[in-house]
Image (cartoon, rainbow over the protein chains, first blue to last red):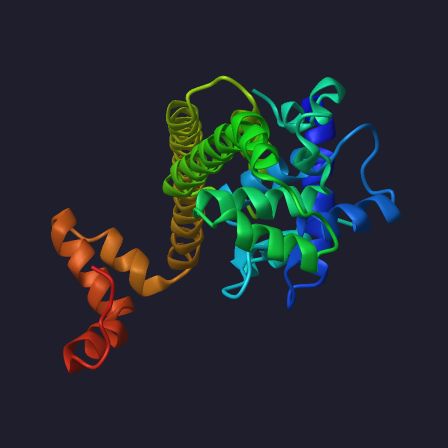
Length: 90
Length: 213
């Protein structure tokens, strides 16, 4: 992916997470939503999305959410992430 | 390594059927292997998820290929997260917030580049300091201009008022008498003051109102 595609994927991820701040999404769930809404063009897959989420974590916009009873990994928007989406993304 | 290297290549799929599992199951499998779950327990979990069972050789092949790459990928993702966190902290220290879209865009561009994140963010903060200092200088200069203009207006006002007072007193017989007397200038000034500013002196003497000196 080029940098522009990466940025679009990041914005798609933060949009979905911030629009549903009360729940956490697994990578697969997030990917399904992004694809069904056609929020990111081009060829991308779950590892690309995982990388996008790593950057958003570093920026403090999302957090990892661990299920203590299982091994599935999910992500949830932080309050900063919700604020960022409200202020900046259509 | 990049993210797509985690996709199992078709030539290896025969040897690593575990690599054909859906993404989420592969990820969970890797986490369980990392935490040293025994094969029996993993097979039980996979069976509950509708997959497997797999034999020891399947697990061995998976560990040598996909799992090894997954570990390297986790290290890469940690590095991305740490790098971006460094950028965010440096920008925060410079008074910038990633809630500002322009700063967010800048932060991700720095993260996507080869720039040293701490140096790049520090340079941006230094730029802000320079711009702010320049702005402060411009504002101070403008304040000085306005003060000079105010002083000029005050001077003009004083000159006009002085001329008006002269014309007013020239028509006053008592003022002309004082001006044309043989007294010294300082005595004439004192006499004019007592005549025309007696009420102001009385007010000042009460001490209730502070007059400008």
